[in-house]
Amino acid sequence: VENSVPPEVTERQDATIVWVKVFVKQAASTDSSYEPTLNPRCVAYVLKLLFMGTMPWANRVADMASAPWDRVIFFLVSCLRGVGQVYFMDNPVTGFVILAALLLQSPFVCSYGFLGLISSTLSAFAFGFDKRLIGSGLFGYNGVLIGLALATFFGRSCFSLVAVCVFCSIVSTLLFVTLGRLLVPYKVPPFTLPFNIAVYAYLLAAANMHRVEIQPVRE
Image (cartoon, rainbow, N blue to C red; front, side, top):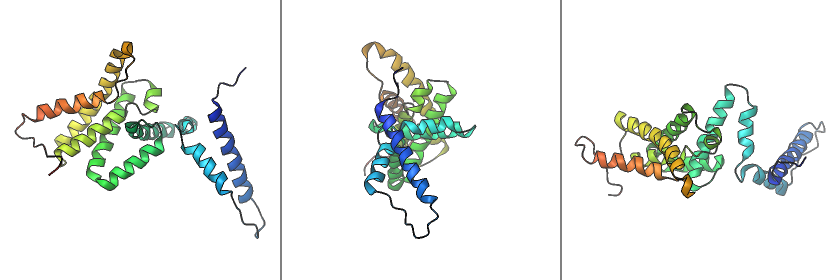
């Protein structure tokens, strides 16, 4: 029977096992004069194998965890992948770096992006959509963009803005599935079309609401 595991995954697992064995051997050494050393190239290579690409081992960690931590880890990894998918990167580390950069730039905007991310990903779980798509972050990136856009255009936090962010993020999840099925014959993915539909619909509606003040993006 041929091995169905991709070569790069096997290579990543083998390199990780070697690195762990070396680390454990050095940590267990009883010689007080022994100074553990690791080849910098080896460490860099292992880190590259672990954190580059799509990091499939992150989802396997969630599968191996006991309940309820398996769901918590899977949800967090899915959310981080969703942020990375804004730049077409199915990588949780990339998502974490992007969130950190947003937080440094504007905690207010970042908080709404995070709210949209959680809302869209949780709604995908609640509706029982494909777990593989959820695990790839495909239900998260539209929610992130919605939260960032609403916070940018409205500029100040209020309960109504929180409610709109949550509602539009949930709608984006439904739109993603609906548009995905409609576009299957044309072999075109929906990309950020759910985000555009949800945000533009609300902006057009808000333009006629006297109590809703839209802030200019730039002064």
